[in-house]
Image (cartoon, rainbow, N blue to C red; front, side):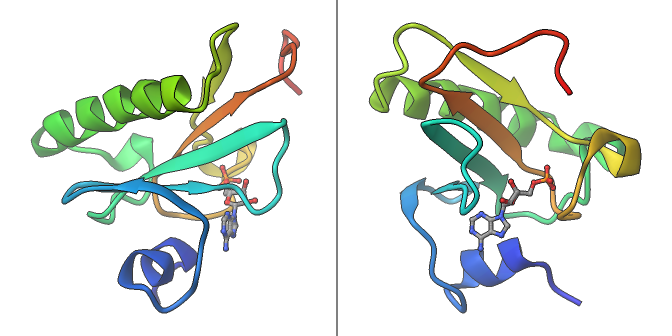
Length: 112
Ligand code: AMP
């Protein structure tokens, strides 16, 4: 069964798309947890970072570089946080790897 992100990637479900290329799509999170909150999602289905393989190395690097590039485009000059939730304890709800980028407010540590 395909996840919501596969449906967004295939165009079945609309999303607020900030960027896309052959490897990834970047969308605004529908339940933003900060003034700016977007997701960087690989087009290849990798269920979670814990299941990524050596062959995913360049895709994973690309996702981080795009996260930084779009953060810059979104004018997050005073900083931002990158989060990957992995598995149940990590708070993952969609089993298709995605990088959260949150900014526009002061982040707290430790995270909840
Ligand atoms: P996670 O809990 O780390 O698996 O993150 C899943 C994220 O996807 C959550 O922050 C949701 O708000 C977000 N989300 C779920 N459905 C959509 C959607 N249709 N468009 C944009 N973001 C979504």
